[in-house]
Image (cartoon, rainbow, N blue to C red):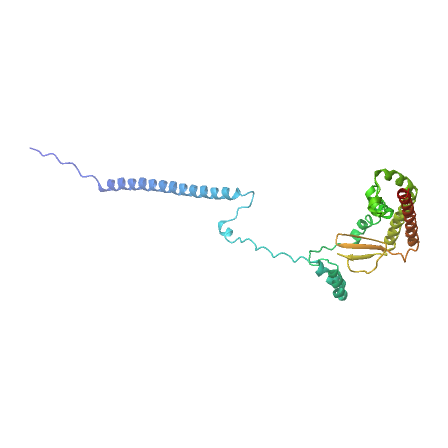
Length: 282
């Protein structure tokens, strides 16, 4: 009986080919997975960077500052406040060698020298001062009233106090109209002369200004002059002070006006005294 031959063993070469093919496929898979992992990691980094940029860019248009640089930014320390010059500081330099003498006079006049002082060149403020000098309408009216020495509305109390009589000789409301009528003319003349006097003062003050004959100083003129007059006015502002004084020695017509007003007042007083005498000696 003939025996059939057994299966032949596979070739070792074929086995190697299969193994090589499997290795190539495995290597390809590993490469693809690696690329994907790297891509995901890269995308995550880009996303984190975009978030950081968006956050920084939301600060009201400020440029993006790298984190490393931000740590180095330090706010500057506040500067010390500048020294504010006082009136004393400025005037010491302005008057120089005369300052000690001037300082004593200003202090004696009660002026505070230790307040802040701001200097303005005189040329920048002269026009402002010029618009303020002289006699205003209110000032003229006040002077006329002062020179008249008579109330706008006459009362028994004014007459009784100005012309003292015994307690039993006081006038009442019935005496007011006749007294007003009695003094109307002389009061009119006093008022007219006083108005002329006020206009004259206004003219003389402006003349002083025009010729530069006045006292001018930074900060104050208090205590700087011993001149006394029948009229004086001072103005201050913008770091300057001006004083204009009119004296009787300069204007001899002024004493004459004052004397004439005084004579008219005496004439009026005599009229009132005459009325009272008749009133209480009937």
